[in-house]
Each structure stands twice: as structure tokens, then as C-alpha cells.
Image (tube, rainbow, N blue to C red; front, side):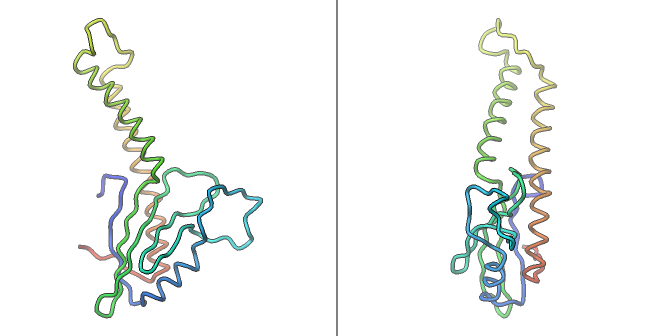
Length: 168
């Protein structure tokens, strides 16, 4: 999924399932819908979310707002002396919806431009080249910004869990 705002990979570690859950719990605080800097405690954790039996769902806590930060879900499983963590990163739901609306509008304009609109009297104010450029620019921005944020989380989780990425 190199060219999509989505990550799906596996980590392997020698840590036990319980040790992984403990390390995750140490860096995760419960999800808060409104974060104001005056209400932050001195000891701020890196992620918010929850750890359930052998699964977790987390988001990185950041100052300000970053729509490109990934939502990280993971499953922990014991596998013959090693522990495997399946991790999926995807865009925050509301960001995905907004991008879908933008892409939908641009694609409708593109098709209307390609096929002459509903009638010959309709003249679209934006040209075909500009529409294609906007679609590529929007997609590139979305993918690059997401990948930059996912790399930060990927590195952090690998270091925290003393894990290495394995190829499938």
C-alpha cells in the first residue's frame, strides 16, 4: 500500500503478550474529545485510545490539530516463542469523509469537462488540465502527509516494543 494513505504491516518481538500490553498501557491515556493545554497534566502520554485483551486502538496525541495522523489498530498474537503484532494505520474517519467529498467534486467536474457537461450551453470555469493537476495535488498531499505521520508512529512503536518489521 505504498501509494495509498493506509499501512498494513507486522512486527515481531521477543516480548510476551503481557509485556507488550503493559508497555502500551504505559503510553496510552483514555480518549478525550476536547484537549486544552491548560487542562493537560504534567505527565502527558504519547497516545490516546484503549487496549483490550489482545487488541488496541490508538491515536497520537499532538499539540494543535493534525488531520493526517493515523488511527492505529493492532492485534497481538503469540507465535512459537515470538510475539507478532499486526498493525493497521488508516486516516481518521472525518478526514476520509472530507477527502471523499473533495475528490467527488473534482471527479464530477472532470467528467463534466470531458463529456461536455449536461448540455452544450454549460461552460465550466476550470479547464481539464487544471482539474487533473488539482486531483494529483490533492492526492499527493493527502498521501505524503499521512505517510510522514505514519512513519513517526511506526518508528515509535518499533522502538517501544523492541520489534522488527517482518515481510509477508
